[in-house]
Image 1 (cartoon, rainbow, N blue to C red):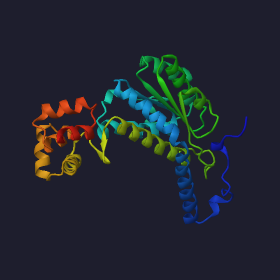
Image 2 (cartoon, one colour):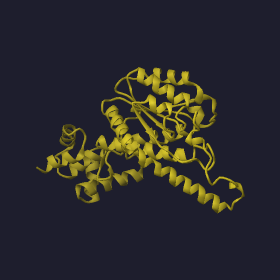
Image 3 (cartoon, helix red, strand yellow):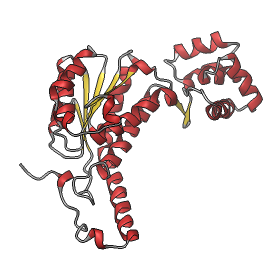
Image 4 (cartoon, helix red, strand yellow):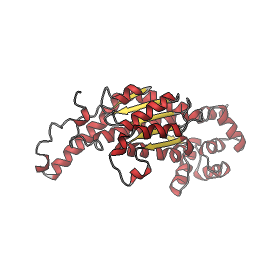
Length: 298
């Protein structure tokens, strides 16, 4: 088997520990930047995966992440913020980690090899063709996420595989394979660094585009945000004021009428009679604010 890209030695690693701290940090920073740049090579596949994910959420299905180790942390970081940032129902976002949630405080390597545990975790969720499962692994061969995707496909779910090595098993298993060809790590095999950075970026891009497909972004504003703290309540007022071209006092009034829901508040501030009319307009346009505003202005 050819040496995996994620296991190769970095060309500048010789004598690394003998260098000045600032030289080491500069090399690490360059490695992170080069890893981040690799994501641009996968935008077509990320776009396909985001549309597949949006279809799952739109149909009432779930977005299910399956991963181990550092890749699991990247999955968790992306998944946990989706309900608050984009108002996606929490029960529609699921994370399956090798070793379970215990791995968050005691991350050991063994569970990533347990494909049977992944198979059972997927089967326990009773997935269907409305669901989308994303498996993440730097090597692309880790048994846990690979087995999770295999089980998901057998159940009819859509699947996305994300790896940092071309030709990896998870890319061949998935309906959509996303290869992030990160360069060799400065610390050989330490995929929590460059590979993890690229995974984090790719997952953020995928889920953000998914939210855009779902109508949760308007002119760069998160118009489906759950404003459950003071900072987000202030942000919600600013969003309503900016989109409806009104003052923050009127925006606050509209948010009070919409019970804090940003999209109908925008429509109320822009002239909708009440919450009922605003909600009906959004429903008529699949939750997308722009066509609802156009209809209001006719």
